[in-house]
Length: 157
Image (tube, rainbow, N blue to C red; front, side, top):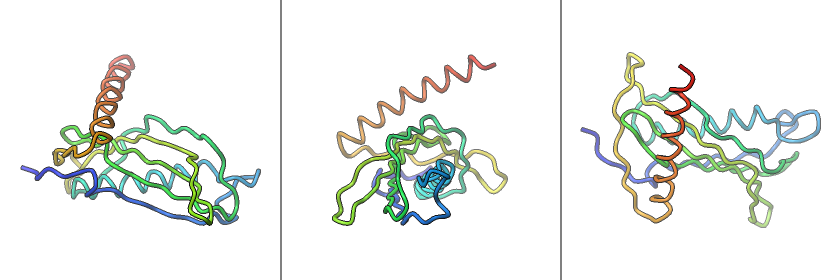
């Protein structure tokens, strides 16, 4: 049996200063680069929570809200929002941080990660301890997203 874990135990932050290789032809952060960073942050969060290797099962939402430009400091923050038997929903928020420390959000993504054993088969993950009202609200929203994913999956078969 897995020992339950809190949201705080698996939080992860990744920080980048945007360089020319991170930019698209318009001088903005390349969307594919941001997607790569988001996937890595989600994987770190899920590995911390599960104590296992993980794989990305789906990306529910990836909304680009504002651009980021050369030399911007980009901060990605990941947290577990909801868990199933072997799956974990992870929210990754992306911000541009000014030199004075103020931030504005440029992206929010929800990913579903699955814990895997050595044979790459799904394995149970720890339950999630909800400590704050925000944790509880995220759990409830995650359960609604899970129901929608299951509905869409049934419609596709």
